[in-house]
Image (cartoon, rainbow, N blue to C red; front, top):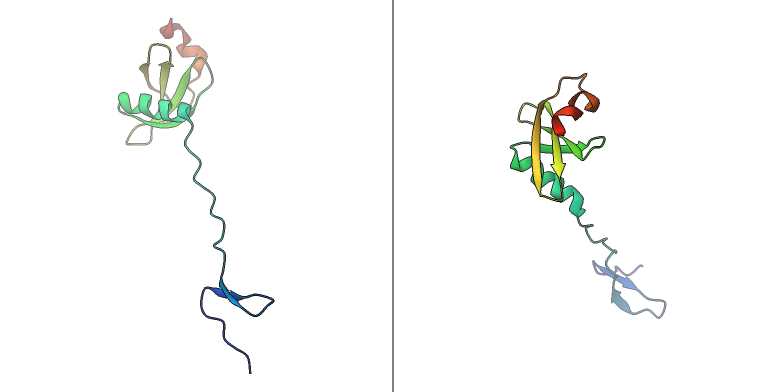
Length: 100
């Protein structure tokens, strides 16, 4: 006949019942500040942050219809400039001139 161990407890080698250790839960990792800055900049121009874009200092953002937009950031002056809707063939060199 076996003895039932109460729920949430374990039996030691000495025969005593002790509470089981709780499994180690990893703490949530904080969101990097740069990502938070990118999200805030995109929100400031009415878009949602999607991902970093190739330099110079730009990110991809999407609108409510999931269309891609290019947002240029100036982190020193805390400015975000919404370039415009980007067609699938849109590349940064085409838009570089408007950022000068």
